[in-house]
Image 1: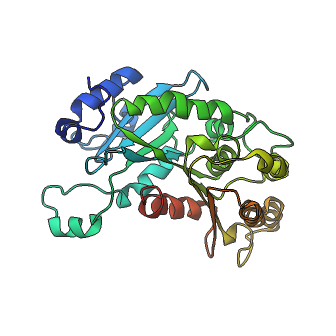
Image 2: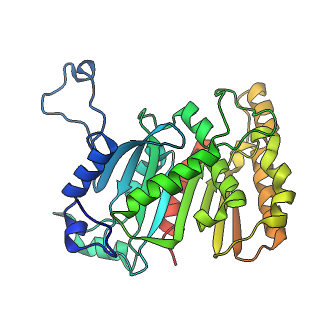
Length: 332
């Protein structure tokens, strides 16, 4: 089993079989995707097998802090790290967000591929580590699990139409930083000054909440369409008090995005949907949050807000999952 190296050896960078086995054994499961049932296989060719993502390892673990079981995806870097370690991107809703990022994640030249094309694409792209944090259910969005993990303790009516359990954000942050991060760090050196957190919807709410309450754990935050309506807009109601004590010890970036069509589409599909979008007012809330954080002029905090035209809620997951890899998490 590999030890905690100061930097990966050539064997660690090229032969991941032992690492995959070690992670699988520690998590108590094989490091592969769910096996389809006999009913799924019925009538299909005998040589068809479950599909996986290239240069990606997977394992499951149960958190002592949350009690939930997670499926973790580890994207293998395309080259050795700098002496400072790998910049690391943590992607919430990992079974949905990580695969979207796959086509822009740097990877080395494979057999039959154009080395010139890869070299042009990579240029001086630094090696980075991408961690997708999903749920063992296998659902891209485990609605109830994420509603519990990604939300702070409600300070008002939740406004959630589907889930009844909320308020587990503090426990989930402990899982990320005290359980999962040390496990990954046993095998990959990580740059302690360049941890990025990507979250969408409730995941975006978790990103903003973490920035406002425990900013030391990440230095870059991408909040895509954050659910700032949660708890009767409690994060915005609590913001003045937060700003009185909020401090950033290291340079920190917040990217907060929203699709214009989430509140102001060219037309509404129904009157009910119109009322729903106007009540949540997500575009207005994102603009307000960004404006107030910028106006506070907090040292070491850089805030960027994007309202993207002709994009709806799910569009912003795809918009962010690509750009957070290409232009945010691994740049200097």
